[in-house]
Structure formats: C-alpha cells, structure tokens
Image 1 (spheres, one colour):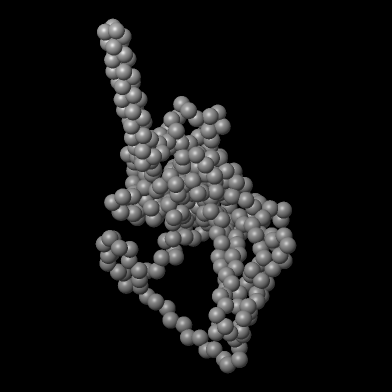
Image 2 (cartoon, rainbow, N blue to C red):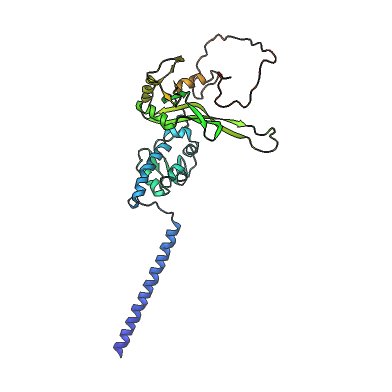
Length: 324
C-alpha cells in the first residue's frame, strides 16, 4: 500500500514536469514566431540560389555595371538623383526594390537575392548597405563628373534616316546603337552610344483655351555621341575617322558609311563641338576669368525689304535647307 502511494506520487510529479516543459516549449515557440514575423526577410543565401538564379546573376552584373557607370549616370536622371541624394537614410545609394522595377532587370530576375549576390561580386565598384537593401558606388558620383565624357567622345552627323513603318510622317534611324558601337569597338572600349532626338509640338488645335494638351513628337536629328572608356581609345578612333579637325575638313583614313544609301558619316571631336558652341560671354563657375582680348568686330547692315520674308509651317523632318 505504501509502495503504491509512493509510485503514484512519483508518476504525478513526472507528469506535472512534462506538462510544464511542454508549456515552456510552446511559449518559446510562440515568441520565436512573433520575432520572425517582425524581422525583415533576409536575402536568400548565395549557396541556396538555383541554377537559373546563378545564370541570372551574370546578366544582372552586366546591367549593374552599366547602370552605375559614369557614362550612364550622366544620362540617367533617376539613378543619378538617388546617388546624389544627401538624405540620412538613403545617401548616395538606390534601393534594390527600385532596381527590381527596371524592365532590363525584370527580364532576368525578380529575386532580391540575385541582385544582392551580383552586387557582392562587384565589390570593387559597388557597395551594399548594412541590411543589404540598397546599392551605392565605391567611388561616389559627383556633379563635377557630369562633363567627364567630353574629352572621351566623338560627335557624329549625317546618320541615315528612314520613314517609320506605318507612319509616313514620322522618321526613325536607319542604323542601330549596336551597329554604331560595332564600327568603333575596334579602336577601344565603347561605353556609350547615344542617338540624338529632338521634339516639336504639334498644334492640333487652333486655340489652347479648350484645355487640351499639345502633343510633343520626337524626331531623329541624324546625330549621335560615341563615348570611349579612355582618352587614349578616343585618340585612336579620332586618328582614323575624323572628317573635321580644328574647323578644317579632312579626308578620314576610315570612312564610316551606314544604310542602304551609303551615306558618309561626318565625325568630329565632341570637345571641339562644345568649344565652338559655348558663348564667349558665358563663364563656367569655378574658373578664373581670363583677360579679354581686343577683337575687331565687323558690323553688317541688313536692308530688309517689306514682303520678302515668308514663314512656313508643316515642313517634314527630312527636309533640309538645300531642298527649300
């Protein structure tokens, strides 16, 4: 009888201990779940990436190198404004969430872990913030770098145009960015080719008082900019392709011809274009003013006669002065 009572007491004590242990484990599990729910999702480890993800990493690396390059940042206002931002929570960086909205990123991946892995593999040029949610540059981009392309670029004119399919009133380039890049790649690394466009306003309505917006139409100018990685690469290209140097026309060693009409492209240094386009009355900020020389300015008198000037509207974009 006494033995039975002792055994029953021990059994009850053990059962009570097991119940307390189970209750403690349940409590700890609930706390862990609550903490996990409140913490931000951590990027997937590189070792856990699938084969498709690893393949996407290589493509994303190419896109990131381009997006954060000096050449692109001079053209890309959206990324540039983030990298120039001085906000304490996002200074000099752009969020991975924003990058994942880029079409040329989405065609390769929608996974944050892929972007993080690609950025880590480009640690010589890119940085990740502490929580791996934003990317910046090792060498910060500054406003002073905006003109850095000028001594490394060529200016092209007379690129061929063609009528846009389905719209006889619209024109488009008869040459692609890749075709222009391929022609210059033999001289050095080409980091940017930009075909130039302009816009005009189509006044579809006689009056602007009806509240409808004017329609802006983009048209090609037949010009392009080719930027090289270094000034040495530019010099190699310039020696072979320049058709104008120091304001004088010259015969190039390597004539550039594009399109079915075999139009010869005119090539100049962008620095020369900028030099002639800058007004002598405008001084760059931060530069010391040079003493002005006494220059003899010739004056001309134009004797305009009434009724000798006409104004034309609706001139097609492929019309030039010679045609008029």
